[in-house]
Structures are given as C-alpha cells and as structure tokens.
Length: 584
Image (cartoon, rainbow, N blue to C red):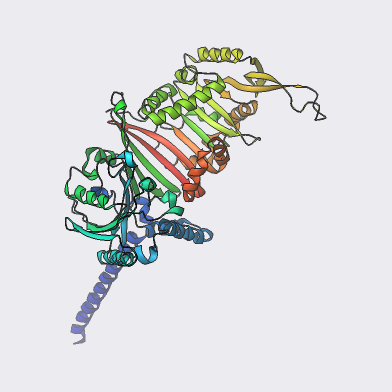
C-alpha cells in the first residue's frame, strides 16, 4: 500500500510545486511589467504618446501648438532619479515653484485641483492672432489650453466646484450647451483687448500669471479616427476659442492633426519625445515670388541622462534632398583652443551663407535685423563680409570665441585654402592699408605671422614709472598660413592660443565638447557649440536683450551647461537639425 501511495503523493507534490512556480512566475512577470511601465526611466524612450491628441482641437492655420506629452509628476520623478541626494530637495522645490507660479493669481492649487485628474498631455495653442479679425480695435490673441484627464469624474468635479465658487462672487458667469458640450465662462464687462495680448498661460511670464478677463472652460472627449479617445479639459481666454475647437474636431479638413504638412513634418521626427511643438511660420504677400519660403517648423524634445535632445523639421517650399556632408568633426577645429566657450564649424561657408540669406529674406523683420547687424560689423572692419570673406571659403572652416584677461573676447577664424584665398588675402591687405594700418611680419611658434597694426598714443605715458614710450602698437588683426589653412585672429595672444591648440590639445579633444556632441547624429553638416557658464558674461555684454530672455526662462538657464546644434540634411524640402541642451 505504501508503494502504491508514494507516486500519488509525489504527483501531488510536483503538481503543487509546478502550480507554485507558475504563480511565482506570474507574479514576477506582473511585477516586472509594473516596474518597467511605471519607472520614470521609460521617459528616456519618450512619453506615453508620440503625438498630441489635442491637435484635433486646433485650426490648421493656428500660429503655434506646444505639447508636453507626459504627466508632470513623472517628469519630476525622472529628475529625482538622476539628481544627487543633495540636489533632490532643490529639484523638488523648483518643480513646486513652477506649479505654483503657473497657477498664480488663479485661485487654483495644483495638488488639490489638478493633480487628482491630470493625464499625460498638456497642449497650449495660439489659435489666432486676433479673435474678432479686426485689428483697428486692438488685437486679442486667442489661446487654448487642453489638459488630458485620466479621471473624468474628478476633472468634472473640479470644473463644477470652480464655477460654483465663481458664481458666488461673479455676476458675469454664464453657461451654454454648444453641440452637446457644456461651456462655462465669465465675460468681461469692460473690454481691454490690448492687455489681453499676453498669454495668461505662458510659462515664460509665470510671476505675473493671472486669469484673463474673459475665461472659458469645457470638458470634452476626443473623437479622433485612430480609436484613441482621451478626455480633455479645455481652458481658453474666450468662449469663442472653445466653440472653434469643437468645430475643428467635427471637421477633419479644419484641424491641424489632419493637415499633410503637419503629418509630413512629424514623420521626420523619429526619436522618442516628451514634448512637441509646431509653428506655422508667418507668410506675407510680398514673399510669394521668392525662390524659397519657410512654411512651418516642428520640434520634438526628448530626454537623455545628461539633458534634453530636440529634433527639428523645417518645412520649405522646395523639394530638395541633401545628405549630411560630414561623418566626423572638421579638422579645422584642431586650431580652436579647448578653452573656447563658443565655436561654429562646418564646410562651404559660401553655400551656407547663400542658403541662410535666402531663408532670412522670407521674413522682412528678420532680414532687417541681419542686414543691420552685418552693416555694423562691416563698418567697423571696413570689409564686405560676403565678397571679402564668405565667397572664397568653400572648404572647411571654424569660428570661435576665446575669452581674454580684459573680460571681453578674442575671435579666431580658421578657413581651408581655396583657389581664391590669396586673392582674398591681398584684398584684405589693401583694405588695411586704406585704413592706414601697418602690415608687418614676425615669427611665432616657428610660424610666419602677419599682423595689421595701428600706432596709438599711450594714455598712461608719464604716469607709470616703467612706461618709456608714448607710442603703442595695437594689433587690429593677425593672420597666418598653416598647412592648408588660413588662420585669422583679433590679437597676437589669440593666434598663439590657436597654434598651441594644434600642439597640446584643441576643442575637439576636450571632454566637455565630446560629451556635448555625443547625443548628436554622427553624420551631419557641422556643429554650433556654446558652453553657457563660460560664455554667459560675454553674451550678456554683447546682447542686452539676453538678460530679459534669461529672466523669462530662468529654470532652464540656471541648469544649462552647454548647447550644441547640428544640421542633418534635407529630405524632400524638409531641413532637419538636432539640438542637445546639456543640463546640470
């Protein structure tokens, strides 16, 4: 009997063991799935959605759409993962300050009113430059803020509670049913359109954030053809904006989501992203005859362990296709010192300038700004930049800033020789002589150096005991031919640094520079590199408006370590670029 029962007990034991193992495997698989789906590290591959569902609310002519495609709390959690223990409390405080500032003067509290229902999308759109289309009475820009809801009941409770409170204090609160959607809004008794031109939802003016005089809300479910129907809470500075949003959903030919240009641009943005922006660039009647027009710009922003990576797609009127021309940094960078906080490097400056001039000419205001800047430079230097510099640089080139002891900056320009190089240099010598500069040569680091100098009177003559001469020689420009390159600098010290860089280590060998280009595609058209902390004082001195921009976007500038931009070719008229913002 014992012999007969033993196999049955073994079978029962093994059955129990197998069932237990399967249960553990199931729990492990479920736990692993939960961890991999809930961890904020998933955001390194992009947000839960790739495109803003709220694009169906926005007109295809809307000037701007900007979307964050991830819940703000998950974004904060990701920041906490990479922050050191000392930085975590500061990081949390910064996020809390942003939330409070965004809702300042609205009577709303993020934790109480928004956090219980907010989903994975926040979309802000500038719907129209002027709501009534009549600029004679002042322009009132239309704004729409669409926030996805992951809990319809909680979001509806939020709206109901908000308007109950408003109706107790405001006699202008109104309600209407528009195409089955409940609209609530308060109407201003006194119109002040000019004051409404600033976005109440603009995060760059957070300290002054306030609700507009006319304010409207609605709760609406998405009706996209994809089958994905998220619910949204809509906020606008006019009930007209929400009515238009509902109309856009119902008519596919009206909304941005179904426009070919929008979809075409998004197809070129293939990286994982947590944010997306789309801009319809302004066009004017005078620009229709231009060979090139810039139609729209799409920007996708993703995250990596060191910062933010953005891809851009600029849609133009041409159907050109061009592959990136470089697979590694240009050799001209070997003469850029590692201490340079700003550098631009690529090839064929003549062609680049022609393309840039064509693109700039599509916007009258930008064109005037560029022309005025060039005129100022050309007046100081006495040169025609296009004819005397740009046209002969057909190979590699590099332009860089080098800080000096006087808290200003020297410039270094390196260009590969071409058939027109010597002719161009002779022309520069002629210009120097016409300005009564002396042209002399000397040897520096075993290289023949040519300097354009000017004799000046020393202001310290007779004051300093060691000053024996009343005459000083001031270098207005320094140049040298080294191998296949022409090097131009604004001082002898900068020339010495450029020659030393080739011997002891240049920018391209600098670890910070290598880290700043690592996330960028290896095939590209060159680099724009900016080390922000090292060059901040230089640019603030040169560009007074920069201080205002810094104040507006202070959280970003406070953490910005470097900015690197590269162009990555053109596909059927869409010019692509990648931007890496390295953050502390």
